[in-house]
Figure (cartoon, rainbow, N blue to C red):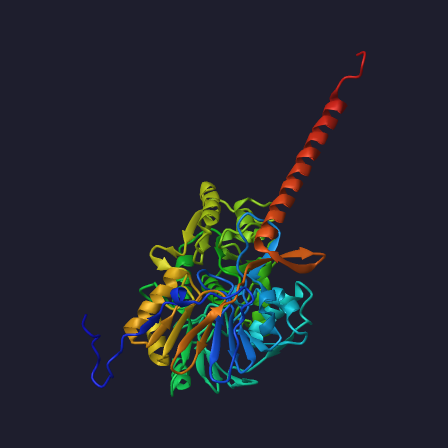
Length: 528
């Protein structure tokens, strides 16, 4: 095999050494927990490996730990009553007692949704650091379970470093579908690590900031021991359009529509909503917004100044019914076909919501998460059977959705700016992680480590060693008297199914009793 070509003045790139962690992991007892020392940084990927969701990463040094994000995964489909699915916090007790802080990269559910499950296991008053917008979203998550006073939520400026014991954090702005997203440069006396969080390159966002690759290069100057990096779209060959391009496409799309336009997107996608509001204003349409989670997110964006008077919308859908449908647009939740979301209720012709009719249309301005295809198809088919057009992320060749994650060319740019000695790809299924490793190999990164949930790596400026794996069974949160109680996922699923069966049996018995009572009333009296 020939060596990769180099440009004039560029040093030859070395083929990276790939660490096959799945083969080299030593057997470790269930009670294993990694020790830390002053000569290295321990990187433990607690969640977010092999699937989308539950993104937690812990960094250990000199007896102290730092936790970056604590997200949640989605409960199993068709099982009611499960609030969150998270890695078992009880298995992390040796870390949580020596935790300097939790820091948040951005406000997406798969990065902050596990905080209500984690909070009761944290020493009271543990500090949670986030930007203003993310802090509002964290507070909202915790308030639902009366846990907002258990931790100390603090905001910080992304313009200055944050010192937490032996960890110094350098916030780096990155573009993403959630406002105020950050990467973190993590410095310790034993070396520096770049944690990218979720990011992409978008030179024309609407209300979020751009990725600061120059800041990445400044932090990496002098060498990075490792980069822990998002892999969600590492298998995509080309970048997504900018958010301003999506906004322009929406404006063109609205010009040709005569009925009501309903759009559904992720409730956290403030930049997309801001663009759709702008496009609707250009088209002379009044915007209505529906869906609790979406309204909460937009309120947080208003309180923190991300949205302003230019982003006007109404929330009383009764006013929508009095308008000419061609002069209105409804933005709502339910892009994944979720039960009880506004889009699903519209498809089911919920009489408490405005009725859609032929000539109206629905736009899904979101990627269908793998595993949700069936639910989305059910919703889309219900609309189509009623004569309502459905557009899945594009119309007439115009993209109406763009991913918030970096594609292959964007990741190549990040690898060039950071030039880490070691890549640890995270946040993705197995093929996403493998694609990221391939990119690193082509870029000449010295080593690539494919992690696993609970696996701990001891990283120095020259080496990467597998310490072992902490056993982290998935836990499900269920509500008991307004409190979140964690149970092993398999137990919670069994209990939820049994409860649903009992409820169905009670309902069937009620129907039988009602039918019997009706027959008795209608039966003729004896002797007649």
